[in-house]
Structure formats: structure tokens, C-alpha cells
Length: 448
Image (cartoon, rainbow, N blue to C red; front, side):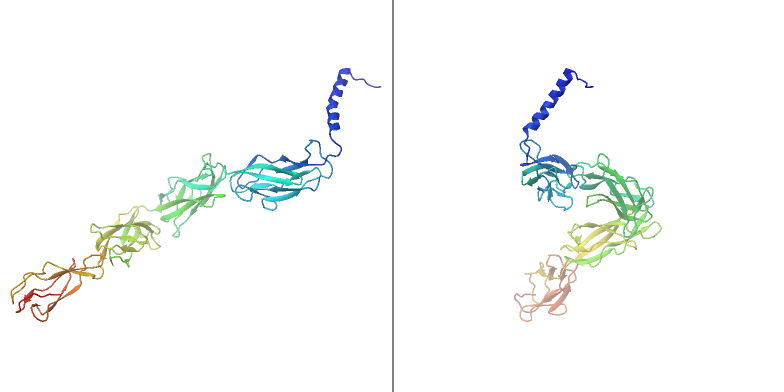
């Protein structure tokens, strides 16, 4: 029995079938491809160093919009990304270019494409014998850590075996200076060569934390070990080469400083052969290994002074295994005289040193006020002859021997003891000859 459909339903079926017959009728039986069209993968973004979520795909097509047929498989499609700047690489070859073949449906899909480490927008071009298309891609640095820095807890000190007051905090930023949330940060406590160090509360010298919305990761509190002295903690995160550093210092309640030698001397412009040295001791008289000692040089009103080798007037040195801290060498300036230096350490009274820049070699003589005087024959000249001896920098030279010589013949005179006399310069570089008595010949003369 044949079931008859209502007229309305039959009409609907007829009308629905008309477009399909019309479309089929408008496409040719033979329709080879004549263009390349973009299928998927354009207008997407990936983080630096990460793969793009959608693979780059193209297909062979015909400009008439009808399905293509014929030999569709095996057509070569070359995908090319920029050779420099913002770009990426294809999986498999690790290069910015790759060639793939179309499948039986005329479709070509590139391997997974990964952004390089340069942010920016760029184009990947796909080309074939049927033309080419462009994919617009963006490498984004947003959310990729590029720096980590200490944001809290650096520079603290704590008593040995005590707890540091603040945790260590480190901030992670991306290339645009935005905080990176969810980055894992590794905190590490590194002991000094002398053993000063610590552990995180709960035990262990290493721990990790995840950054919050502000890009900040926070460690547990640090507990100092039983060795005084400085040590360093670091914070690092994946992809960032330079870690953040946190200088820390374990201290003891009471320390004393003992200068190993308080008075040092060197010629002006030269380097002191001995250095400033102190011994750091705890309340029981034991050496404090690794204690940070600050040495400082103080210029005198006379101008005498110096610098540590390298040019600074203040420096920090650390006590060795015997508790002795030694400064760099001191270089005297060109002014003779005495000046001071000091050494200080946290928890102890400072100790002082006296440094003396001595004058250099004699370089010049200058006569005093005794020149151009006169005396009767066989009588004493009223003012004794004197000269000042100075070095090349104009500093008076003490202890220099000066020889005074009167003429052999004619008008002249004699010192006590003869025609030639010797005298030694005093602290002001002045040498004074013995009294000079005129001989029996009148006239002018010169004493050298």
C-alpha cells in the first residue's frame, strides 16, 4: 500500500531539494585547483618560547567556489617565517622554513610552530604552484618571566641560632614590566666559606614558592646557624639567568676588636708595606670567623691622608679563620704628616690607628733670613745661618744632613770647629749651622 503525503509536506520537500540541484548543476564536472586558500592558524598569539595552539593549514581551491577534483595529493607547499626578529620554528627541523605536501583532499598542514624569544607581530607566508597566503601571528612576552629581584628581606642580620625577622621575598616580572603570577621561585641559602649560613623554618637550605598576583614569592623565615658572619641567599625562576641575591649576616651578642698594630708609616706617594689588621673576638675570647669589619681612613687638617688600593677611603673586610680582618693596602698621598684610621664591626666599639706619611728624598734647599748680614772682622755674625730642606712635593724633610762651607781664601769666616760645619734638619726640615765668626779680611763672601 502506498502512503500519500499531504500536499503541503510534498511541496516543502520539493522546495528544499531545489537549491542542491541548482548548485550541483552550476559546478563543472572537472574542477582542478587554481588557488591556495588559508584554512586555519592565522590571527593567533603564543607566549615566547611556547607553541601556537592551532597548526597552520592551507588547502587547494578554485576561484569559482566549487569543490576541486583531480590530482590533489602531492602538491608542495612551503611555509616561511621571518629569518630574524619576531618569528618561530617548525617542529622536526627546528628551522623557520619547511615544505609539506598536500593530502588527497588537497589540504597541507605544517608541523607545530613555536614562537621564538622575540616579542612582536609577523607574517608566515605559505606558497605553492597555485599562489600563496599569509598567516598573521603574534609572539607575546606577557606572562613570561624575564627578571627576578629581591623585594624584601635582604640586608638583615640575626643572632647566631636565632630567627631572622623577615622572610625573603622576590618579585618576578615579564618583558613589559608586568608581574608574573604563578611562577615557581626557588630560594636557596648558601653558606659562606667560613660556615655562616642558615636553614628555612621547618628545615632545609632550599625551598620554593609560587608568585602571587603581584608577582611576589615569599619564603619561610630563615633561622641562623651557630657560626657568625655573612652569607648569601638567592631566588631563581625558570628562564631567568640572573638570580636575585639577599645578603644576610649572623651576628654574636658581644664582640671586641683588637688592633694588631696601631702605628704605621710610609713615604708620601708610596704604598704602606703593612696593612690595617684587627682581631675580632666574642665575649669568651674566641675568634669570630667571617665578621664584617669596616675600615675607614680620615684625612688630617694638615692634608696628610691616603686611600685604600683602588681609590676608596672606606672598605669592608671579613675576618678569616683566626678572626683576623685585613684591609687592602693603603696608598699615602703627597702631604707629609699623621692621619687617623679606624676599624668597626657591629656590636663592638671601634678601634683606631695612626698612620704617618713621611717626607720623600730632599729635593730643594731654601736659605733663611741670615743672608746679607755683616759683622766686624774677628767678631761673630749676629744671626746663625739656617736652611729649610723640602722634598719634591714641598714637604719639609726631617733628619737630612746639611753641610755649610765657608770660603778658603780672602774674606770669610769660621764655624766652631772649622771652615765646614754640618747640621741635621729638625721636624720642620730646618737645619741651623753653628755660629759663624768673621776672619781678619774685610769684604763680602758667600757661604754655600
